[in-house]
Length: 456
Image 1: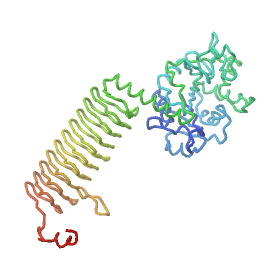
Image 2 (image 1 turned 60 degrees about the vertical axis):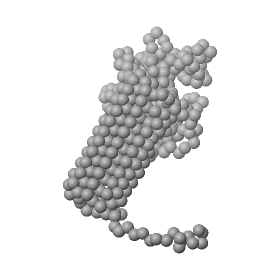
Image 3 (image 1 turned 30 degrees about the vertical axis):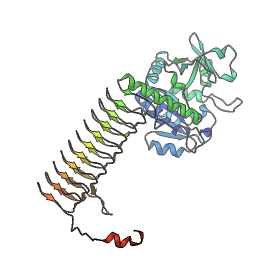
C-alpha cells in the first residue's frame, strides 16, 4: 500500500500567532487540508501527520481522521520523517510520499504522475521538482544521464549551479523499505546540526540505488508561507486561481473586488457573481443566477435563476426562481422552495417556505412549515421559543397573514386562513377561517394636552 507522510510540525514564528503554521488558512481551509485533499484525490489515503508545536491543535483539527506522531524536538526534515518509522514499518511493500504541510498547492495529478515515474524507473527516491523563472533561495536539482546525483542548496551552489532553474519542491516519493534504511544512514554532520531529508538522494546514489526527479508542470507546488505577507499572497493567488476557473466555465464577474469563492464551490453556467460576495464550503449554485452584491453563502444548495442581494445564507437549500432581497438572513436547516420571494430584512431559521410564497419585509420565521402561495405581511413573527423549548408553527397553503401578526407556537393554521393585522394567534385555526384579535380600542381625548401642558 502507498503511504504519505506530511510534515506539519512548523511553528511559524514569523506568523506571530500560537497555532501550527500548517493550520493557517488559504481560502477558508488550513494549508494542511489542501495537502491532505491532494493525497486523497490521488488515492493515497494511508496518511501520517508529523506534528510538533501545539500538536494538540493538529489532533483536534484532524479529529481522528489520520495517524499523528509527535516530533518533540526539531532537528530537520530527516528527523521529522524518522518519527514516522513505526508507521512505515506497518507495511513496507509499497511507496511513501513525503510532503510539506505548508505547501498547499500540491495537486493530485502531480502526485499520480510522479508515482508512475517513480515506479517505472525503479527509483529508491524520486524528488518532485518544478521549473522557476527566479529560483533564488531554492535547492537546485543536479541531473545526470541516469537520473540525479543530488540537490544543492542556494548557499552551497556554485555560480554555474545557480543558473539551474529546476528546483526541489520539498516533496518526494520513496520505496518504503528503502526510506527506512536511508533514514538510518543520514547524519547531522552539518553547520545546522540537523538531519536533512535531501541527503537521502546522495546516499542512494553512493549505494548504487536509483535516484530520479519528476518535473511537475505545476510550478505552484513550490509556493509556501513563512510570514503573514506570504500567507496573504497565497490567499490572493488562490482566490484568483478559483475565479479564473469559473470564468473559463462561463461564470460572469463584472468586478472581482471582494469576491471570495472557496475551492469546493460549484457554480452553473451563466451565473453572475457580484462584488463583495463570499461563497464558502460545499456550496452548489445553479445556472443563470445573480448572486450579490455583498452576499455570503455557506454550505448551501442554490437552484437555477436565483437572485440575491446583500443576503446571508447558511446550511440551507434554495430552489429555482427564488428572489431574495436586501439584508435577508437564512439560517441553517432552512428550505426555500421554488418561486418564493423574500423581501427586505427577513430572517428564516430552521423552516420550510413553500412554493410561490411571499414573505414581506421585517418578518421572522423560525421553526415553521409554511405552505405554498402564502402571503406573509410585514412585521409578522413566529414566536417559537417559550424560554424552555422551541416549538413549530404550521401555516397552510394560500394563507394570508396580516401585518404584525404573532403566531405563538405550537400552532397550526389550516388552508387559506386569513389573520387580521395585529392579531396574536394562540390556538389552531381551521381551514378558510378569519382570525381577528385586537382587543378594545380606547380613545382618551385631551390626553396629550394634559401630559404636555407645560410644554405647549
